[in-house]
Length: 436
Ligand code: GDP
Ligand code: GDP
Image 1: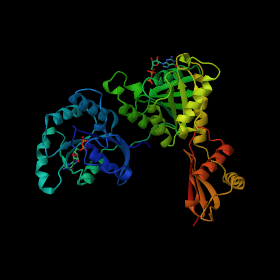
Image 2: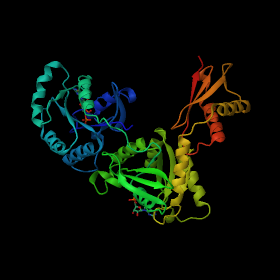
Image 3: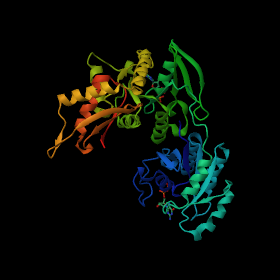
Image 4: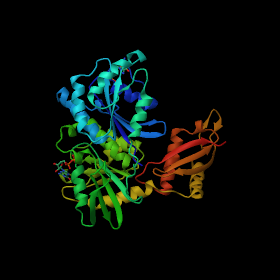
């Protein structure tokens, strides 16, 4: 299932990030009364009644040094490209402004549903101020108050009416979906082209869903794959391609739809902070991960170079210790053929279910080898372990008292499970629960 996407658009200071935070709820901290403080978070999962959706605050996507009007135009265009439903936010205390009309002009051209909201209607007496906004041409304006949390229910009800009903990806369930993420210029599109150009790769069509029309479908040795597009490949040359926030947004969207995520690094330039952030998103999403070091042709190397780079990666991405690393070159095609087998392996492990009896033997052996921790004379007792989910593999350990399961012991159990079953390329999750 792909969740519907709602984007909030509007000129600065109408209350976009306030509304975003309200809708996202306690997933993130409460907005302070300083414009711009919450600007870091612009994309999040959200819920309204029975609806699960993702929400984008386009106001957080700043487009370099572009003039003000260009910025909001670009933000509106991003909303049109990325969202299923657009919330057009205005400020009831200031009335309709020229900038609102600019936004409206762009949204008219969109074939996406637009719901008009008038913010800062903090009390019922102010409701009369919404009538002006009919002039924007998007029908009935919804009065809301972000700071008081008023009217949001009605607004979201209206938005939800426009959610697409068919949210499937329309791919066979045994299709392996993967994406390439990484900062601009690491070589993502070159890599896709290199994969598509491989001899044994049959490109069946370039199709997919209406929203993500640039997915590439390929078959290798009878196995179907979908390469999910990200910004680097799709928006070449557009003004907003270069913005980090927008790249991140596209990456998050691609990760969400993927089984396996290839985190692409530039072997020539090395690792920078942005790479870490991007890799962190892949890990947090619980997808299988393969680390790809591209441009290896351009690196001056001796027999120690690869080991050193690998060590560098391990130090920077401690959380991705399960991800295999491949060194290759999209340019010379060297070792491109190793990618598909890596993706297969990671995807298989990600979806793997282990036998309960074997799992419990492994845990009991682990406990025999390294006794459970104690706290104030009370010892952790492990009764039983079971795998409760796949993608990623998730385990529940039933114990006498979950508080006694220290992080380090949990980590030890994780490593024992990894040693016993493999699971290379996939995160695994372990939860301790009290046996009732
Ligand atoms: P953005 O630039 O569109 O994201 O706007 P912000 O969310 O940063 O809000 C701009 C200012 O308007 C902040 O000082 C908010 O506290 C304030 N604000 C937001 N929503 C409301 C509201 O419903 N009523 C009032 N009175 N102020 C609000
Ligand atoms: P993207 O923004 O991540 O999609 O990166 P591109 O695929 O557009 O590549 C960015 C630049 O790196 C281009 O000039 C490519 O020719 C170059 N490039 C890509 N892959 C390689 C490689 O394996 N080796 C070298 N030397 N250059 C590469």
